[in-house]
Every structure is written in structure tokens, then in C-alpha cells.
Length: 600
Image (cartoon, rainbow, N blue to C red; front, side, top):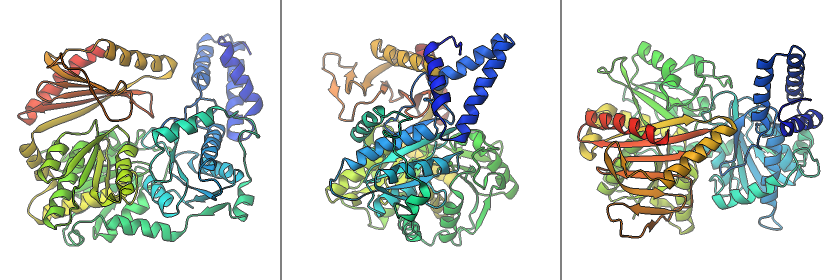
């Protein structure tokens, strides 16, 4: 095969010969081979170049088992989500599980969402686990990610797996690995698994072991998760309610969309049980569908994903839109607003996160149910309004690295001390929220319940979510947040992201948009440089090492840059603080425009 890149050609030939375990992969590889041959016969240089570019993207690297597991485009190749990459990752995880607690029987829980091949990849993982003498507990239908976290702890498993790509487009799928504590694997454990995975040959049956699913099921090595686990999960969710009867006669009208994901059954159930009787389900997005036909990017952070739901809201004149992502761990909302151009205002993850924090703190303090030394946790890229809210109610605010495993990990640390009740709430700006510690991940089922309860509470007390948001800004300051997602595809894109991060560290800008940079945080070097006091040595950062930089500006505005851990993107987080909402918006426009020039 005369490909320009000989290394890629060899890998492609190797896969053509060996990737026979999944008929879909065989068909896909043969189709590429045929198309390339036809293009060469016709001397179609444009098509040849296109196919070679596609093959390079498929094979230029191995899909990395990172700190959160796998995530990638579904298909044939080393840089794709497929039968072989999933089986190899699971073998590495199985080796890790079997290396712990010698002499003890081992078990792993598995869940999956609505994406293409999710159920198939879950089955593949179960077969590998069973072949490694690890009992596998698997949900009999798609379930939200938080229900996987719950099952790990409830069933006392050694690990957990959920097959999902969260909010990515339809062509993606992913694989999240969890530890015994119900959190995604720690950095240390992830490194151990990564080293084990890297040693394995994808196509070696000696390296990657595989049991027959039906035989393993008959032997009890693969079992379905019992209904009592599901019921116990819902009981724990309802325990997070602060006003258990407020919804029943509130008259709140809700539109709900699961964005064709796993949220339909659990969210509808919890809303019914708390007394939300007027719920309209968005029909086009109600049922599981990995194609996501009406929202190609099923991310509740973005208005495009909510447009169909907003149309239903306008027709029904509903008060609130609730939208959960495909694996139902994140939730976005829109609130009826007669002053808005189209009748509804979208709330950001920072706004909902901060408002839930205040609702929980205020109402628990009024009911005298706050624990001693209560703790609320947020990521370093989330709103500083939360710090002011926490201070007002005597709650300690703790910052962690981006990733909910770090937030939930604080609950785990407190549990080891016998103080887990101190953890009252955690959130991140990307629409993830957790009240209580019954699971160790963000939970859109519980968050949907609390958002509706909060809306009903304000409604019954002559207020609204809009009024509560306005008052929050009046009380704590006008913070405007925006996340810029810069896409960098392929090997050249990865190199570009690396270059940008190196440049920002090598030549730290001392001003952005004419505003002095007062402090520079390098979370990789774990140092803070104080430019206002240049003679002082850098201070240390206690958080784990991470590829993140932060610029704090005069007046408390902030710019944070980090490469995404799950997508080929560079994320730039802007926080702009003004004396009015208009001033904060204008400042964002200025800072974002000037910082974009700095990073090129």
C-alpha cells in the first residue's frame, strides 16, 4: 500500500490483518482500503490526500487512557474508541484491581449511556473483567453516571466503569474509570493504570483476556444490578431536599429534555415524587438516540442544544426549562423572563452553582441543620461569588483542580476523618452540582430536583429565580463569566496547544487590555508569582500539579487557560468584575479581544 507516511501505512495494514473481532471495524477498514485503491486508480489526488489525512488522525497516536479514562471518535484505529481500545483499557484496569487487596474477591460496577456502541462497549468491558476473575455488576439499561458512582459504593466494588462521552457530538464515545470510593480514579491510581495499559498489545489474547459473555453470566461472574440499588439511590437523592412539601402546590410549570440521553426516567421520576405535577417532556429529545438529531452538540451549556426545549416552553408558557446531558450528570436551565427578547433567560453554570449554594446555606442555617465547620467545594475556574456566599454563612470554601473527582475527593477525605457530614455542596462552572455525599460525582438528577425546589420556594415566597439572581449580584458584585473553547484538531493541533501553554509561561504578560496582572499562578510549577511585590519569592500551590495557568488582574478580574483533558480544545476562562452588569460585560469584551491577540 503506497501511502506517503510509511509508519501510518504499516499500522493500517496491521489493523486490516488483525482487527477481526468486531464486524463493524472489518467493514470500516475494508471500505477505507477500497476507497483508497479506487482513488489511486483514478489518480484522484484530492481524495487520496483526504484519505491519508484521515488515516493519520486514526493512527498517529494511541488513544490515551488519561486521568479520566478514554474519550475519542468511534471507529477503527489506535486513536479511536473501539472494541480493542476499550478491551485494552479494561485489561489495564483489571490488572490494577487484581493487584490490590490480595486474597479478596474483586468486583466492578458498569453503567452506560445512550451513545452509539455504549451498550456494546459495556458488554466488552464485562467480558474482560470476567476473564480476569473479577465479578461484574452491570445495569440492565442505560443509567446516569451518578448512579454508577452510587453502585460502586453500595455494592462495595473495587472499581467502576461508565461508558459515555458526556456532552460531546454523536461521533464520540468514552470510558470513565472509578475507584473504590466512587470517585473517578485519583491521579496516582490513573498513572498506575496507564502504565499497565501501555504494556498491552491490543491484539494479543494473552495480553487482553476475554470471556464469553453468556457463559460468564451463567456462572455468576456477570450479574445485573438489583432494583434495590436503584431504589436506595433515589431515597438518598430525596434526602437532599430542604423543603419537602414546597413543590406540590407551587403551580410550577416545567419543561424537561434529557437531550436523547439517560436522564428521561430518573429525572421524570424524581420530579413526580417531589410534587412537580406539570412537566412537559420535549418529545423530539425524549428517547435515547446516539445520533442526537435535534442537537448535534448535546451540551446544556450551549443555547443551540436548548432551542427545541425553548420552543416548547414558549408554546406551553412554562416557568422553567431543565436540560440534562446524555449521561445525566450535568444540567442547564432557562427561566421565563418577560423582559428577554424571546421570553426566556439562560442561567450559566456559575449562576446556578452559586444560587444553589446560597439556597442550601441559608435554608440549612435557618433550619439549624448546618454541621459544625461546614465545607463547600468548587473548581479553580468557578465563580468567586461562591467564596463570598460561603463566608456570609460561616461555610468554608475550598478550591480544587478542574474535574469533579477533585471536588468529590474532598468528601472522601472528610469521610476518612469521620467528618463527611461537613461536606454540604460542591459545584463546577460546567453545570455540575452535588449536594451531600451519597455519590462521589456530579448528579443532574439531584440537581434537577433542587433547582425545581428552589424555584418553587422562591415562587411561594413572592420571589423568583430571576429576582434571586439579581439580588445575588447586588449583594456580592457583578461577576461576568465566559468560557472560550478553542479547537485544535489532529497532531498539529496538539503541538499548537503545547506551544501556546509554553509561551504563556515563558513570557508572562504583565498587562492584559491595559490592566496590570497582579498575580500569575502556574499550576504545573505549583507556584504563585506576586507582581505587586516582586521581591517576594513565589508562593507554593498545595494542589496537585496540573497544566493550568491563571492571571489575576487589578480589580479581581481573572483569565485562566488550560488544555481540555477530554477534548482537543484549549479552554480560556474569563471572569470580569464590574460595578454594574453592563460594566462587567464591556470589560469582558475588552479583555477577551486583547488576550486573544496574546495567545495568537
